Length: 388
Image (tube, rainbow, N blue to C red; front, side):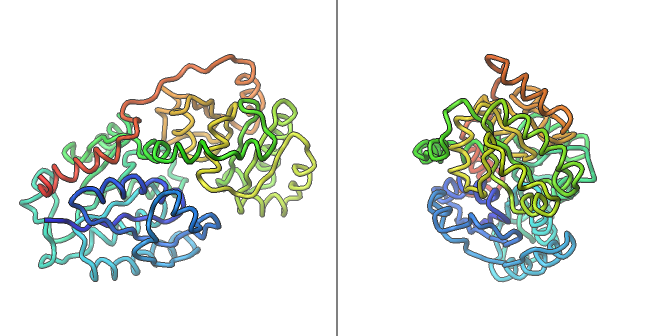
């Protein structure tokens, strides 16, 4: 017996994460389908992007587009409910913490099609309180917490985890977060970090890229910057202070800054872009795809970011990371890895400390080994009883 599984993706990072899982599922008894909600328009979602990931075109396009949080969430729920009723999957896998994640989780847990499901309550008795009559809902990257409810992503994480039947976690701290929130232990399954699977799957492709050379950069002698979070880029005071820090850092080491569209728009409207463009040590580029971006990360001296995934990748690669945020949902990257939280006021001092140090002490967290997708397949087999 095969079971139908939906893999939900809303934007480029989601596709990077589901790619290794899609390939692992295709080799098993599972029939995976990719559902692209279209929550974000992404100029890097080209044919080459899917070719690099060896993914087919998504099986379903919801075409949601931009809007407020409520608008996006509502439109995704309405559109995905129709797909659920038409296709009747046995399992839905959501990833990460975007609006589409929580929207598809809500639609999945409220649907009912008893007559169509191959999985019954008795066949998945290992999952506490699964009611049957609807798809199993699994959350990949469950248990991340920043403990900052002003972040929309934190609300999405909390709601999705509360709804999910299966919570696949990346690290022990994520397990503990879920237990404290009253999630039954039988639902929590630590599988490791899927982003490392993606990196290793594409390592040979990444290593063939020559983006540092294209920009005239010397390996180990440049920094990489990414900025996109509203708290950093939506006010002239904060963005201006960060730009001052970037200018100071670029005087000490050449710095590459692929500029997110939101950030570029604000740099222009706040009158900051021209000053950055005229600085010889700072290289501004358009956003780049995952493979080309990782080719920059592989050979950089350190990274300054407000992104979540880069904290994980830099820890795995042993590259120092300064995270320009007051908190992180990935504290293990600080406790065991190369990550450090910083501020606009401290970023120059923290960068100088990295440049003056010979090496950074770190270790790779357990199960961040490139085999997370395989463990997920085994988890599905154990839970569903299918494929045994």
